[in-house]
Length: 172
Image (tube, rainbow, N blue to C red; front, side, top):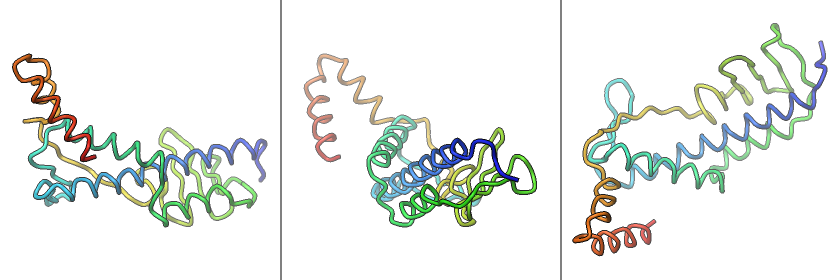
């Protein structure tokens, strides 16, 4: 059975593919950033990545930076190729067994409260993004970001904090 507005379905699929590629690439960037901080990452028994020696705010700053880089540049060639494969597929779209399952060429979208997109059998959007999934456990203790903000607000240490901030920015 064909779809009434196949163009709209394709645009939705393209959007899911784009978000999946960005989030998957951001995950890879964040993992690389965390690996570069020696001794700060360990996997626990449940498979969660335990980030040590870093406060929650610092982790959020790293994650935001990784996301901004991913929005500008999908560097991983596998992710880029899968996104292109999904968004340029010209196969017809049709329902697959249920009205919530839509198959466009080799890609499958599951429409619902938690949409999913599978590109050539790999979950590209949903529980995994571009095939990647990760969970993190982060301490709420000491935070470089909070300490720097407090130092900047204290007139006695503001000059020192500003220099540290400029140095940290130049490292990025």
